[in-house]
Image: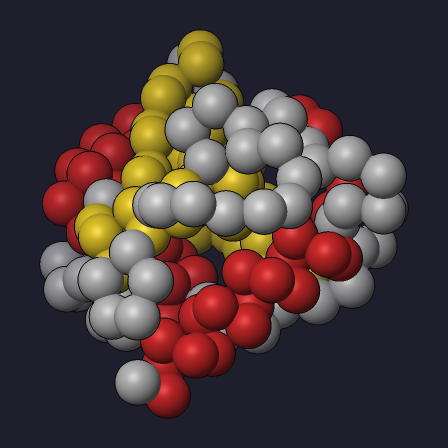
Length: 161
């Protein structure tokens, strides 16, 4: 229950922190809002010692397996992760939060509110750079799992509660 309350707190703060006038309606607006220094949000870079092709293959598999889920304690919310390879040197992992049921507040973007975006870029022949855009609180386990997946580690899914 404590984790659920914390997750709801982060969602509320995320919505408030990046929405002085309007809620980002797409991935680029979300990244731009965070790059400007939104409260309780961060931009972080990580370099994985893994080829781009190998990193993206495992990231896609694990994102689909681990980052699509529904929380049903208290309020119901769907979390949806999408992974797409844009070209031979760039891929994108995006995670959205869609609260189910009646709600008040800003317009919900198609697919839900943006919670996290990760740009995955070829840094060199044997390294891949990940740039995280997302909450600065409560998501460390998810960020760590994504970093470890990008390194090729067969670690399990982060806990969602």
